[in-house]
Figure 1: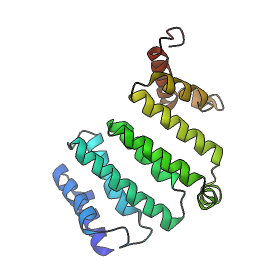
Figure 2: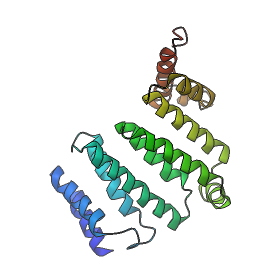
Figure 3: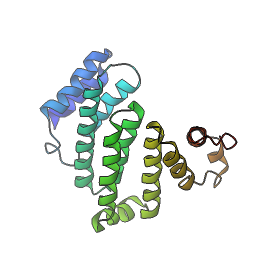
Figure 4: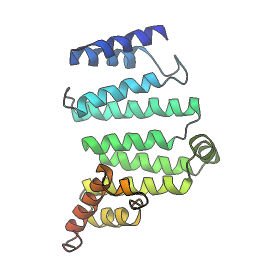
Length: 203
């Protein structure tokens, strides 16, 4: 635990991007999720590396990103199991990373299928409701929205449009929710999918 903390401390204090990457990579290579059960630092190392790539501070090939996101998901699922957080959290975050990088979107759909199977289990529903104050209905809608986002990037316009329209969040439930970035992004995606199916008036 001390060794892992030292590596993470070095990563956080390093001003050189390559040194940061080096120390986060060492956490992944030299430690495991079982070293410190329930430790969010381990999957956090993967997350920090993904942030570096997202911010264009470090370049990574599609194959390496694929491995990085797979490792992130595995470590995050282990954390969820140890802390009794519902697994859907880890699954959806992994899908979001694949969407951000447009990386192996077929895998994103596979991850969502795994998430749906897990959500049907009693243990998952208990952890979701009792430990996370969530509902099965809202999580299912979230899964459906992510499906639609994947379809949008795959240019499967009709499936994207139908999914985004059917599962849109209630953006009018609060005044602030009408004008934030998430709302604008959602309507942009809906408009883009409408354009894709040739419905110009809606777009």
